[in-house]
Each structure stands twice: as C-alpha cells, then as structure tokens.
Length: 73
Image 1 (cartoon, helix red, strand yellow):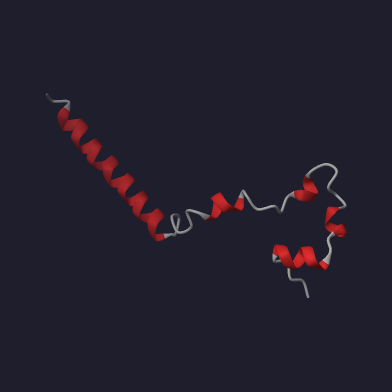
Image 2 (image 1 turned 60 degrees about the vertical axis):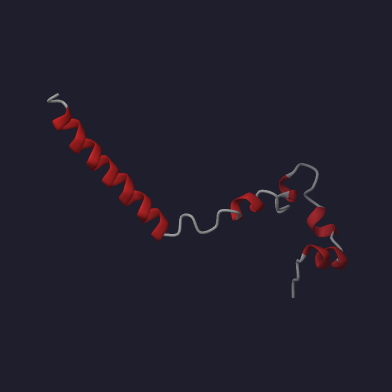
C-alpha cells in the first residue's frame, strides 16, 4: 500500500510531461498538414533517379510541361 505514495505522484508527473509535449506539438504546427506527406510520395519528381531515365528531363516537349503544370519562363 505504501508503494502507491510513490507511484501516484510519478504517474501524475508523467501525465503532465506527456500533456505538455502534446500541447507543444499542436501549437508548433506538427499536425497542420496531415495529407501533404501522403500525396508527396505519389508525385513523380524522382524520375531522373531511376536508371535509364537520365535523359527524360531533356526530352520533354512544351506540351508535356503544360500538362504537368511545369510552367517555366
């Protein structure tokens, strides 16, 4: 029974620390963009890194650039 005098304050301190860490994460914007990383992995920006596609960047036509949203001045 005496062990509860030690475990309850330790549990309360632990809850306080976890709560502070959670509120810090919310206030600092850690949960702002939950869908961005999921869509970023689907984007096709790593084609030149695939073996055999090194020349693909030079072979694009202006029509392909417009379809992909790459508007270069």
